[in-house]
Length: 490
Image (tube, rainbow, N blue to C red; front, top):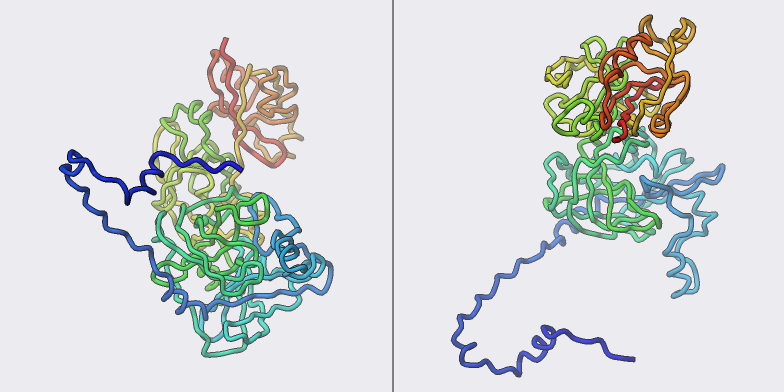
């Protein structure tokens, strides 16, 4: 076997004790040694807070349940655990229960938030469990009762019959900044009280709607794996700033990116669960989509920022305040909205009945409307009018559609008023088809101009030139969204 080659720099460093400096080298000023920067010592934080962390075990007696002990926002983890293979090769037996047994058990972590026995964990760790138990650092195992849970925030509140328990100190996640040191304590792969550390990689990270559109996550490079779910994320003062919840992985194991629920959001849910048994969220009453580059080009905006309103619920606070389809929401209650995904978390945390200033951009002009926030349905996932993101589609165009007037029956079925929209009878151009337009779609607006007749449509599309981008507001069934179509260059 050939030896690895050393670079010239490496060789000189290795032989540095035998080299003799030349006179010219000796006369040169010597570089001052740099002061070493000490890495943080996490020992005091771990010693003080490890007793507040618990191992959570949920058992299922009925139909086998696929383990979700740590969720991947972009796909389920494989059933095969890489740790099983490791333990089979080195010890001749798996370290964890068999895959069949694991489907009946969900393992996770949690932490004590009050000395009288309240414990916080993830909803997906205990959801649907027949029995839940927690194991403390002193090896006591206690039966836990599920006080309440909220799937949208992925938070569950447990209660054990004990007093005088060590409780974690609760911090503030809103003050976190990228680059700050954080550490996690949990039970990855069943290894109790495992400590891992890293830094905050990003804050306010939205994972694209899905099951948790109301959560802006803390992203870290803290190594967490299955079994860490529900465990605490600590700052350097030993305060809990997040609840470890998800990883980004295509293998089921840690790949360098982890996500935690901000503790501010988690405790907001806990307070409501304690008070009334469920979590209520604010509802603005709009469907929004991203302001893409094509949308910005069509509206002649200086940048692609904000959330464009594609639909407004009838009778909602947004409708009463005057928000219209085509408006671009640029701030909510003083908080800037850079992307459509920024809006739902802010709306969700707003107490129903609160009057909130919403700044919009309409026809190039900024204005502020005061909206009385409503209450979202209890099943937040089914709410289409709570600030949910509906991605806009983009394409290119000829325009390549043939339209016809809407009959009264079709208008009634779609909930449209007289003088609203024209029906796409046929898609005649390839670019319109590429944009996703289909016969049966209803065009409500062209470049923010209301369309109520075939004449309106022809007038709005007359004079379009190659390279122009057209913004269409399209209704398909009960979903309204913006579609951009760009005329091909000649």
